[in-house]
Each structure stands twice: as C-alpha cells, then as structure tokens.
Length: 288
Length: 163
Image: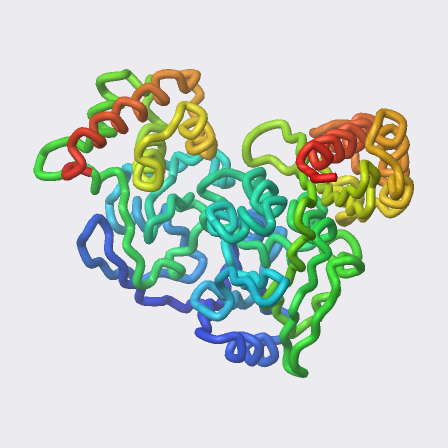
C-alpha cells in the first residue's frame, strides 16, 4: 500500500507553514505524526496534492508551566506526554489518557495536536481536552485566536480549525489540588480505538461533588461533554444512586455507530459502565 | 508530480543517500533500495510491528513513515545490532530462550526491545508486555519473547559496556 503522489514540504517555522498553506490552498494537508493521515493516504481515502510536514518546527514542541496553566506544543508526541514529570505532577489525567493510545511505536510519532485536529470521534484527546477545560491556540494568516475545547469539535472530521489555520498550542488550566481523575477505556486489543471511553475530572468538598467534568470518546460523531450527568452529581456524594443516575444521563446523549466493536446497544451500555468506573476511580483519588 | 528528493541519513552508523518520491515509505527504501531486509512487511497498516526500526531514539513502524521524513536521521535496523561478529545480547537471548517460532516478527521484536531496554534497563514483566504491545507474534504466545527480553536485560545489566 503506497499513497498516491504528492509534493512534500517541510517548513522550519509556523509562519512558513501558514504561508505554504495559503499558497497551496485546499489541496494541501498538514502532516503531524502521520499515524492517522498516512494510513488514510495508503488506502486512498485521502489524496492530498501537497503535504506540509510540521515535524521540523521546533516551536511546536514542548511542555511548560506558564502561571497556573500548562502549555503544550501541538507537535508534542504521546511518548513525551507519557514520560513528562511535569504532567505526571500537574495533569495526571493527560498522562493516563496518553498511555491508552495506540501502541509504543505509534506513541513515539503520534502527536497531541494531530489527534485533536483529525476530528475522529475515536481519538482520545478530544474527550480528555473537554474534561480538562483545555483551550486551543490556532494560528493563521489573520493572526492568532484561542478557542475553548468545549464547542471546538463540530462533527465527524470537523472542527473549528479553518482552512489556512494551524493548531499551534494546547493550554490547560492546572486542576485544583486534590482533584480526582480517571480515563477508563474499553478496547478490544492494543492499538484499537475505544469501544467506549470516559474521562473524568472531579473535585469533592465535604464528601459532596463540588465540580465535575465528564467527557465521552467514540460515543457519537465527536467527543461529547456529558453536561446533564455532570449537573446531576453536583452537591451529592458519589454513591450507587448518584453513579447510576450519572451513567444513565451520560448514555442519554450517545449516538454510537455500530461496527465491529459492537452494536449500538452494547456500546451504549459500555459507555455507561466506563462513566461509572471513571467516576469511581476519580472519587477514590479525590481529596474531600 | 514526478518529483524526487535526495534524502541523506545514517543507517546502522553509515551515511547513505537515496533518491525517493515523497510517497515512498521507509520500509520500501530500506528493503528495496538499501538491501536491508531485516525489517519485514507484515500488515502495512501500522498494527503488527514487523517493520519496526529505531529512528533517532524512537521505535517506529517503517510502513507508516515517509522516507523524506528521515532526512538527517539516525536509523538502526536489526542488521545494525550485531557488532564485530558478536550478536547483541537481545539476539543471543531470543536464540537461547527460543523467543521465536516462524521468526517473521523477530527483527521487529528485537529492534523494539532494544529501545525498551535503553529506556528501562530493568523492566518488570508487565513493563515488557506493555512495551512490546505494538509487535504481534502469532506463534509463541509471547512467553518466551518476554523471557528473552528479561534474560537480555540481566545480561546487559551485568555488562553495561556491551549495551
């Protein structure tokens, strides 16, 4: 399997990449880690006339704390997320999530920005970003804009990233001390996308839920924020009754597509179960 | 569209230069242009790991890397592990522990295990199983592969200079 022909460009700066994108027009695609795009090109599902490889742009890499937020370059790899001491301390949910993505070889190449930008509902970072209240820094010919993850994912392979723009950086506020977290992912085998997965970030106060973010992977055309489930938990303890209600409400927003991972009913049930487990695990980690 | 790029990189310590179309995948360059047939073509869909090579300190699946992306890189294939006629500890351990049956996955397994042990010289069994999860073996049930990696880790720990 060999992709159709294309021209290859490897700019050294974001400014050069944006200029290339503008000059080459809609027949150009950005190449990040390549582990979604190149397989699509090998299968001829995608046949871009130009590839703009972001791999040589140093300013798109790196993980740093800036004030009370963590800034992550879009070309930072899953492997780098997984082995970052800073993230392990400040954003363990992101490390947990990265460890569930694909396999070691793919994690060396796959990038957080590529995963977010691809718009595949099976990708894990969109739900993690929703749970972490992330913002995305987009750069284009008209300058820079910063968008919240909540609202960014529009549908299957569709995000708010516009033609000519590049996702340059991800900004994530550091969760309050004592927050609990978990990413529960059911997958058939290593390397597979989720049959169902749920990301949870949880703050408890006096034995009751003070704040909770719940986001679902591969349960609809895009990552979903389970708002009704979140609201149902506020002010309540985490117990069988509240877990059952939250799982039921999370399932209520799902539109799973039947495929070889299961029929819609199974995937729906598994989304509920992953939500229940993620809430329990986050609760076990949270300080009251 | 018939454009070609001259791409230079290091392959098992030697400088090489190839002329490739942008769409050429690294596995094809290695096997067909550079006669390094250790990396195998298995699934071609980034699942099986038979094509695994080491690129700038990373294990990568060379069926999903464009050769043009390798400009300036240092690549290591299974052919580069043996030094002066002496097998690498991992190659020796796969032999001694019988970490193979048909052998098709073996070059990818060994190349992946090489990087795993560089990053984690003293892995637990769980570390090894997680670390080689991107390499499929349809013969062994993995037990002897895990034993081989453990054996190589012990040997490398006792003779660090040979790593």
